[in-house]
View 1 (cartoon, helix red, strand yellow):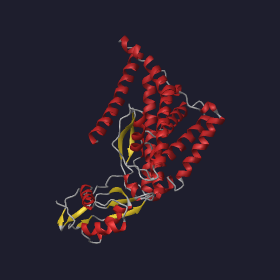
View 2: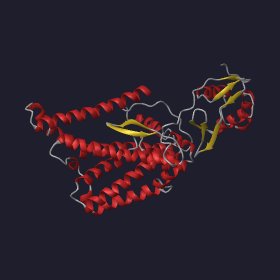
View 3: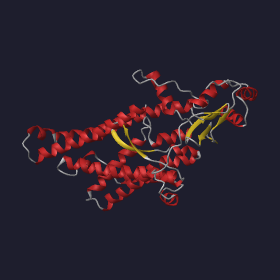
View 4: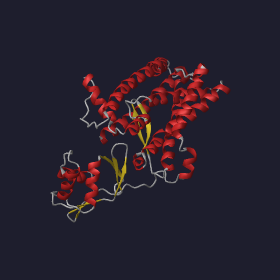
Length: 387
């Protein structure tokens, strides 16, 4: 439909909330959220009063003399964002509201609040300090790459690691789920990946309906659960040192916690930083800055850096590089030695084809590895399809 200065728009039912620097606009019909500056929000409010676009433009030019006002372009953006219900009395077809059935709505908010309290952010910091102190006081608790090798057969080691990882990962994600339900928000789980690892991901998009400080609880709830699991596993190591399972849990949660600090990936801590600073295109802006100095990096589409964000983007660029260094260290001290030992103890037996227990162990190990690779390729393919 043609939009002109004489056009009158009827918008969907919207909720507008002030954020750190701009405003968050929630569309009640599509349940989607948009970040907008003050001038755009003011334009929406004038449109909601029944003014045509020409009248809106005239008032905005008077009210914001230093802003470049293009009301026709803004009207087109509202149309593309599917926020318009009617144009000059003619209904506009939009996508239907997302269904919320089957998205953990059965979890009671009261129960969720008992598990994920409002002091979760402080709890993560306190538990992390306690766990770090335990590593410092008792260095033997610090995880070693050999903690993965519990059995003589590599297929059993990999199977045990997959089970432990699956359980701790589910506990982590259910921390996010419970945090969402504590605020009576719907959510769901999906399969994703971080680098070469298959992970579960909790949809926290409805968290945009919350205040900024409450969104941090949603983002840190998984780490809150992780730190409790790590603390209990360390206690288990102290009082029951012969139970190998505790060592494996510590190794798994420790590496996941370290990866949370690698902010070049969109980890939970990345979203906390983005939410706390109000720079919601932080990764894109940071990669764009780094691409100026590192030609091998993929150049991002130009992103707008608002006033006051330059220092944040510069600091994030440094943190981005530090995250890559941390990942490299983890690979050299944990994953590469584990891979070397695992393939050294399996591939030679697989090539013998003699059918003994070591041969079948190698066969099962390669099959398990292939299965994990299949999940990773599925996640990659889905991401490419959605992009």
